[in-house]
Image 1: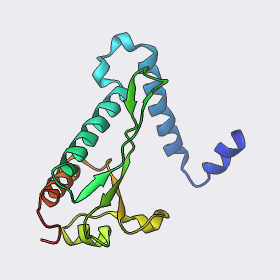
Image 2: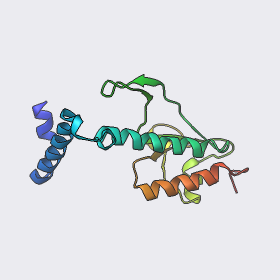
Image 3: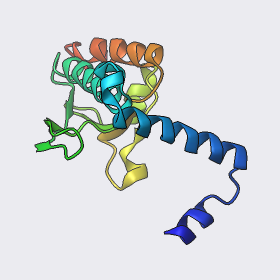
Length: 156
């Protein structure tokens, strides 16, 4: 493991490594003394809540019509928090339904940038979407996707 860390840190400045170590140290300290902090401000709790919110927004936008679909994730128990919930990854696989042949081109025409499934071993019906962009960008993405999803004809 030491060799892996040594090799993977080649090219990363010492300053960046020290900054990352300090951030991880602070996160670890907050979980050792949780009584001193509001639970909602703890790093992993905050991230869980933010990702859950973004996934709800995405699922809501997709459910407005028959144009798109998303994968469903099984509910599992989190060993860290002890809670049961579905996976909330940083990227979503969006499938274009109906008569849309190339999902990436279709979304790009409507000013939504994605990565085609062909880059990841899938086909053109799928695109990968990032859920970890800035709030303003994500909100605009959801607004545009909601509009597209609610259209009667996807080629409008």
